[in-house]
Image (cartoon, rainbow, N blue to C red; front, side, top):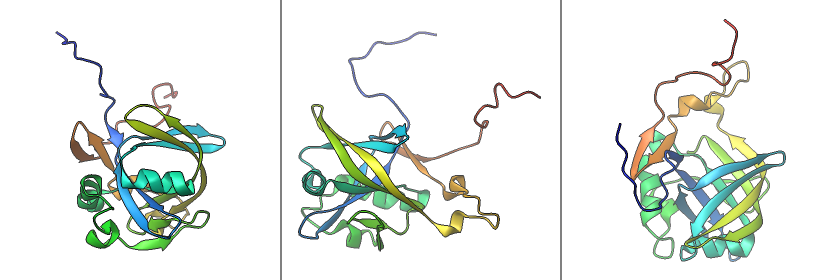
Length: 187
């Protein structure tokens, strides 16, 4: 198999495409799409998002130090794309995409009710890394939608048709190929 060498670039795909909601000190809300988000610690629970400095939401997050990561689904794919190309400086993206605002429990930021999981975050550190600043945040609370809970109290997130973003395109997750540890499990 032959290989080509390309200039350095971000080719770590697929990645989650999430909707990040935020609120400024005056109480104005915004939502933006972030594809550069990731888990960085489980204890304490921490994650990161990377946002371009010129984005309207960047200033809001810098101002308050709070945001919510809202997981996206097939039903939210249009809103996910729209919120990534339109600016909150020009319009209310919550209204334009008919996203229902809910209340966060631990931060002063709206959650998106249509999202199956809302992760409430408090910024602990900002790393200036070139085109983007990375917001390293502690997870203060997680809200989950009842519709993915079964009668035994198990959460079935994979039933939500979660989105992934890969090289300019959106996908839902596909066929399950295994479970954690299956490669070493005794038969």
